[in-house]
Amino acid sequence: MRAEQFDVGKGEGPPPQRVKALVAEAALRLDRRQPQIARNMSDLIAREIRSLDVDRAFIDLLRASVDANTKTITHILINDIPIERLQPTTAAVEYALRLAQRDIPANSLVRAYNVGKDDFIGEIFPDVQALDCSAEDKFAVLQHMSSVVGRYIDWISQYVFEVYEKERERWISTQGNVRASLIHDVLGRRTVTAREFERETGYRLGGHHIGMIVWSTRTDPAPDELRMLAQVVSKMAVAARCSGPPLVTAVDRETAWVWLPFVARPSGLDMQEMQRIVGQARSCRASLGLSGAGVDGFRRTHDQAQAARRVVVTSGETTPVISFGDEGVAITSLLANDMESTSSWVAEVLGHLAVDNEQMRSLRETLRVFFLTGESYTDTAAIMKLHRNTVKYRIAKALEQGETVISSKRIDLAVALNVCHFLGPAVLTGSGGQ
Image 1: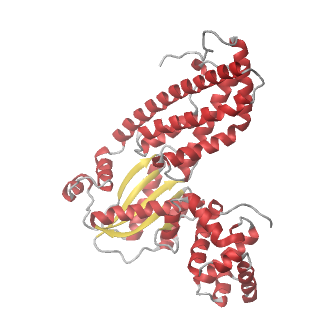
Image 2: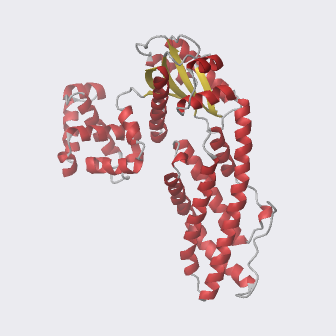
Image 3: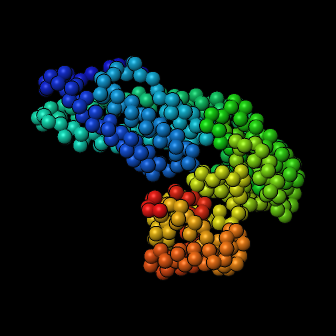
């Protein structure tokens, strides 16, 4: 696309210099609201385009891209910057690269920019309306600002689309494309014979599997990050006493999907040893599914590992390994699929207990453990290393937090407390008083 300057439209109307001055004035007002505009726009894009709502890390990168692009647009409007002087923001380019590495459709990226463009143009109206000038001047200002936004989006979306296409081609060609393609075909329920899969990958679909996701938590992954993850997987496979080498495929520069093979249903993994192995890597995390058999089990255990990972990235939990089979993880992973509804439900069930402060946190955790022990004061005290009278006091205080808690069913209370335990501030209602 040929670089061109954002010029004020020609023809009759207010003088160009006056329009530019009014555009800058409106854009300065817009710039003061930019952080909130970017946050709201990110939420809108994630809601409208579900394929982009992958996990917390991806949402954070989406927010960074939206923030950078909206800042750039406001600066263009304020300073009348020609497009040939612009450079794409690092966050926008990195987001396109990650989408390509995850095989998320390119049209999702283009749609995101179109949704953002429409939303941003809508945000311009109140700032133009607030200008102290004639209706004719406001129309010219709005027309100019809308044109600038549209042309910027055309330019940046074309640029990141090309980045996406090049990265997708490079990624497929460098990561064992036959293996990766077959795995995606099986997960996508496309026709793949077990014999063909085993011939190309060396892995038997007819056996038993435990799915696993391993990922790096480094903010700046090293070039050999995937090699580090592969070493962790090898150690875990040995500890799990697999019947053969694990099946591993990279999904981006810092994440790998894994299947551990077994001839018969495994009796259980030594989770303490798994925690030790992954913990030694420091910057590595892992999530596990339950064992499954055959092609359906291959898919299901992978979905479970993905669900368990979602709990970790949503909550910011730092435990090295989480399993879908860990107490409370399965139901929490389901509720984490709709955080807005889950947060509202938690507030309705827990009342003041859902407030995010230290006092309510200690009351929630005590009541949670109390339910887990079958409402035993003695066992709760032992697990939490508290005096029995302290436990009784906390339980009483917890149940005093409004009629909502008292009237809630025990099962709802237990589930809501479990969700708070795993997801923390993501489902709580605010800081409140101490």
